[in-house]
Length: 491
Image (cartoon, rainbow, N blue to C red; front, side, top):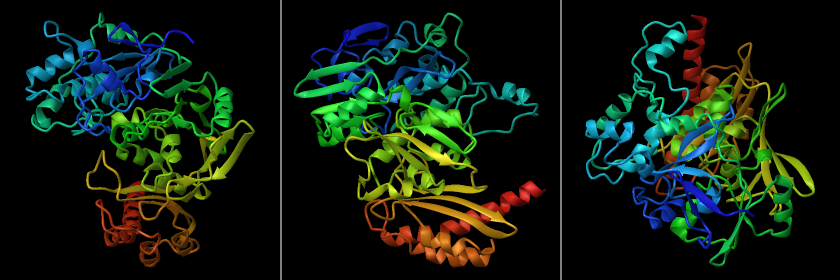
């Protein structure tokens, strides 16, 4: 193995003798880069945000904002990161920092470095286009007011994972909306035209633990056969919380998020195959709305900071009953490709979950890909009921995929989350819909069935009664929206 090190703000810093469970945030602060802060240690506040040089689809680099509090620093071996200190100095502020100061976007300043990094990620987004230019490009007239995008094309959702308790969001938004384009001599902008750092095989042992990044999928699968207790990590948006808040210390951690074999996305005639280690943001960008149900899901899945690291494979791998992707993928009748040293097998997602955080995946297996069969159902929706619209764990989540032919429901797939020990298909409700006319009477009858699906429980997010009521009202909401959209199309 070559030297284990990370390039931070242009300077290479070694990782030797660093405990393998050290997060990037703790490591940065130990090295005097205290701009990054710990606010929550679970990826909800963004005070720890940093920029990572990630590959784009054109062979260049995109500056991607992620939560430093969740990423194991060992996973950054050979990579390049930029912190708030690397953006600018008090004597020479970065444009993002300058606009935040001008707009009064900081009071106590605790969260400001994280905001600056997330804002810089959007500032350097290559396809960010001013609203007027975007309208002209698409032969549209004067663009209507869009509260979630600035006149400079700044996507406000890029800040959805950053919280501020004292400044207030209006001046922060004002600062974001006044950003121009990077200057020609901007080093971070110029960096985008060069390839991102390649994955570096890693084997770090210290403080009683071991972190391995294998060089290939075959090597990974052989390692899992030999070490069945190894813990797999991809985006670390779930494992990082376990490490920070519950003190989890696995003897062996195996990183898989940079394996080429797990980072493919293929659009076939009969199936769409999504690599399990692609981040949710990458999947969203590369699908570009081709799967409308997932296009509805992505903006509601945590925050942009989380989606920039979290993966579909990781969300399914935890076996959690409240993950957001399972209900949508169940509605899409997805299948999983499980790989081991003995070969691959394909399982229906509906058969994958066996109990609370338990699945059919063996210790020597990993999820290689998710397969979505085609054609897609024409009527789809994702409903997420949570205390906050964004960046929150769902109390109830539902995925719908229906087909209506000649006024009769010919196909119905409904996925549920948060109402049982596992995500599940609402098979009784599907049976109540298929073969029946697509009208209010059918929907009301099926809604009564849906209200009784699962075994919802009461917890701090919602009562069992509330969860059942949300199930009972979901189909009516879907039907009403489908009718409205049908009228709009016919008009």
